[in-house]
Length: 77
Image (cartoon, rainbow, N blue to C red; front, side, top):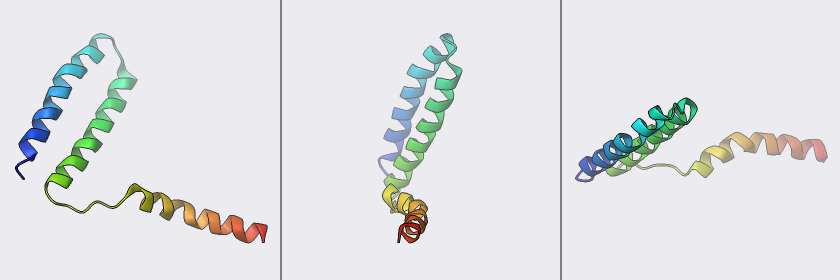
């Protein structure tokens, strides 16, 4: 809980530095991708700072690709 203000302060500093530069250069696609990634990263950091247990991304990848691998294995055999 004590890390939460520092996380939000760091995010605010990143936004104040990067967003005006991207707007000046009219980098709309980059600004969108930057915003999405920053929001995702901030959400992960905040949830971790609040003590939430986060699963590994590999678990989600395995969940998606395991049925496809089993299907291919059945086709080959």
